[in-house]
Length: 556
Image 1 (cartoon, one colour):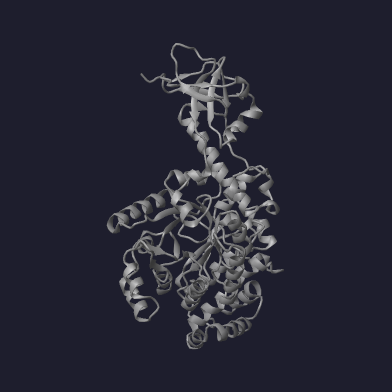
Image 2 (cartoon, one colour):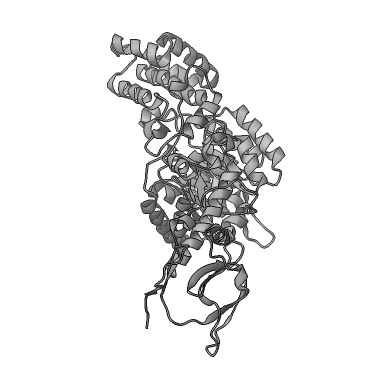
């Protein structure tokens, strides 16, 4: 018969126990000297994750120990210490999908996502890689020569990985997307994070198929790994299915892939991993994670049943992952891995400037909003940015409203044009267009030719001058332009700041990307232990059950 008997006398340490079952099948044996009853040692025992955790009652007091051993209960003997709960050690490698660790050669199911413009810098990816953590370089918006330099730098520092490079969808500038793929294939970049895709393009399909072969056992070898970041089922479906036959045929006809690779393409999905992106910084649909993740996992299971892939696609999460609590919630919902983003932007290794890092470290969860995106401005696509300490989101929205309302720059009322020149551009419109035309004459002369005869396109390009430069100002630390900094950021930044408030991580000068990764994963394991104890009837005061980052040399 199940009973719920709470210990009558509440111990000084505040820990009580509700017995869920009267049937004990094991007894704890060990020295009672190693049992912690005092406040200053209880949490230390709980944090010793690489050892088992035994909850025992001695003389009506509840204590915790990592020592001793368990033996079968001998009902003829009355043990000195009554065993209440026993939990095994907790390893960080237990969380998520172990296949993610093996596939990417990493130490746990945690990665950092790309932040465009090199904010997810070489320094960041190298620091993570040297600690066997996967990081994605922020290649979005960078010219090919800058991307090529980053590839060389990262590969020189991490000849055996792990590392990843972002491949961002560029519908308005497909040549840039194509060039990135060419560089990845040229330098044998074997893992890309595909983001912001609305549909599959020949570029990502070419990258995927170009790495297919058969090994000596006639098994398919996938050299070019794809981690696809999505927030919609229809896009997830495209990455979970084999490459489209039409694109495969075109690549074959162009001589870019072999007949064998074309044949193998029908047997593999477009992506090895699907990152479900919830309410994140930058490009986002602001989806709630608790709704989106189960939906995409279910979709994965449907597609796996249909195609019966040899290796099942893994589904991880991004957007809102910034604390041990959020990471544990994701893992308990079935995430194969977790991805952090906004919080890494405030780290020392980030490509953002010092001023940007400072205001990010002050951000609260409500200090973000949606603003027009430079790369898909005409389509009305928005991204999530920081509004604290900057006027960028309001000014960017004003530009989009003008674009929607008028057909050309000349059609905008003079008073509005004066405001643009004085408050936003700080240049005359003619000067902005002159600079834009000079840039396009080298980078995209075809688009420049179209804009000359298309006033609406010309207006969009003038507005995109501001949108594009504002993110660079945030990275370079452009003096005098702080109020115009475009800082990609999700509410996770505020959540992280709440968590580390009062700790050494409260100031950006102390934030290292590897350190944060370790604390989030350690905290995840600790909270898992705490919740496991609570599920078995242990009542633990909040003092013991909260993980706070401490600057230490604790091994992970």
